[in-house]
Structure formats: C-alpha cells, structure tokens
Amino acid sequence: DDVGPVVLTLDDGLRITSRTAASQDWLDALLPPDPGSHAVPASVYNVAAQVLAFEAGVDDHPASTRTHLSDGFWLTLRAARIADVERHPIAPGLITPGIVVTIEETSATERLELFGRAFALTRREHELVGLLATGADTRAMARQMALSEYTVQDHLKSIFTKTGARDRITLLARALGAGPT
Image 1: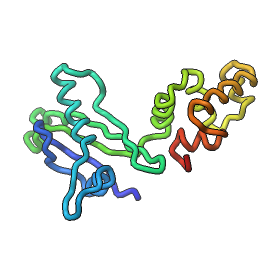
Image 2: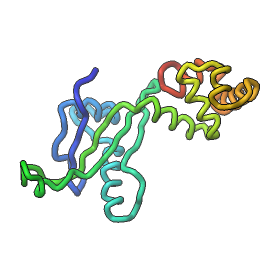
Image 3: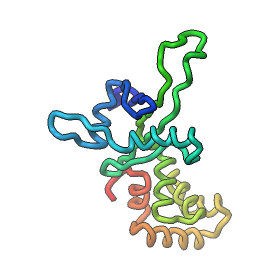
C-alpha cells in the first residue's frame, strides 16, 4: 500500500537521525528483525557510505543499489547529501546537513536493465526484451530493429537459452518481476 515516501536521514557517522513513518515497515521487510527489535539493513548504510566515498574521491559510482525482496519484487535505495541549509535564505540553521536515503519500488526500466545484466544479454538481446515488454510481436520487433523475423527468432532462442525461460510470457514475468518465475 502507498503509505507515503520512505526516507531516512543519517549524519556523517551514519547514524539515523530521522525517518518517515513508512520507513520502519520497509526496513523490516528488507531485514526482518528479531522479536521486539528493529534492524537497519546494510543496504541503507552502504548507499549512505557511498555518498561519503564519492565526496572523499575514493569511488565515483552512484550512491544507489537495488535489492530483491521476494516474488520478483525489487527495491531501489538511493542516497544523496542534503544541501547545506546555512545558506538557505528561508530557513537557515533549521536542519543540520546530512545524508538522505530513499527507498522505492524499482521501475520496470530498471528491472529490465538489471535482468539484462544478470543474464549477460547482448545489446541487441536487451533491446529485443525491451520491445517485447511493450507488447511488440515478432514482425514489429523486426521492423523496429531493422532485422529479419528469422533473426529476431534466433535472438529470442538465445535469450531463452540464457535465461531458462521457455516462452515469452515466462521471460517477461522474470524480466519485469511481474509473475511466477
């Protein structure tokens, strides 16, 4: 259910300083806690630490990660530095600058990209899966990709072999996390 945004703020010591009401349920889903306690999954700390690593010039990767819960459900965690409000003309000094972490459902586009990387799909195979996700049939995919229908079928066979899917429906269910795998 949509219970609002899932946002946590952390200080530079990676201690949680505030969070939205919806965040605890999501944190518990990411890392089921022991009875009577609440745990914070490593993925929250990892994306926040990536902000610090980027600022220190240690690593230039984006401060984001995707994590799988179950039944094809993926979440994306992102982190960013909160702007220094001392320079904010309306509310100077109201909030101490820190790191914000957001948690949201991974988009279909991101799931397709992750699926392609996980199964080492070629650029053309990845493009084909993307077209398949739009509902395109073999003829439409062939036209869009400037290929013969036979070549499209050959690419599909290769994708089925790599992913273990036996048909287009199963392939899309796995790629989009929208059904049984």
